Length: 178
Image (cartoon, rainbow, N blue to C red; front, side, top):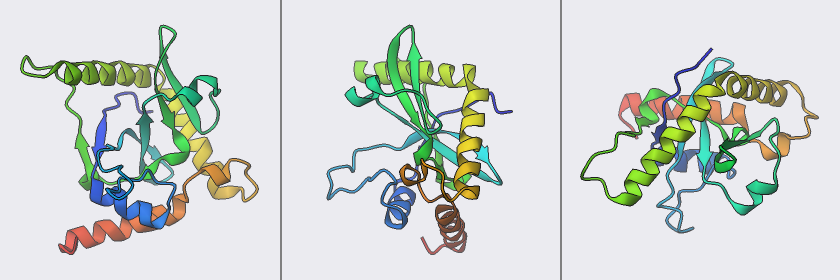
């Protein structure tokens, strides 16, 4: 069981590539004014693959939503800090991951310090709920893979298609094509 989650930023070229395969992958397109969006998440194992579950900032709609098989609120002391979108988790390899440094330095601007403190709180919540997170991700993954009539299927990324693309992408990188 995974208990020591770390926060990772995902390579933008890789995200753009996956978005071209499945348009439900968060866009980081400059044309859509999304090029400042950072794909940050925690990494777990689903089946035989590593997956990155994206952490998202809370939106107004999240306040009304309930935790479900593909969604969890990250709440600390009654405050909604963020959300985990299990339906939008992406297959990943080490080459696409960059560890997020949550160390607060004296030279950091206030907004950076705030972001890092928020990241630490979210990570602590994830670690305290690691069993739930891993179970939820694996149940969702298995349900998607094995049940064609799964009702949440239309909200999920196409996991097998993205796994195949992840493998192709990484073999291109290893050959120096990317």
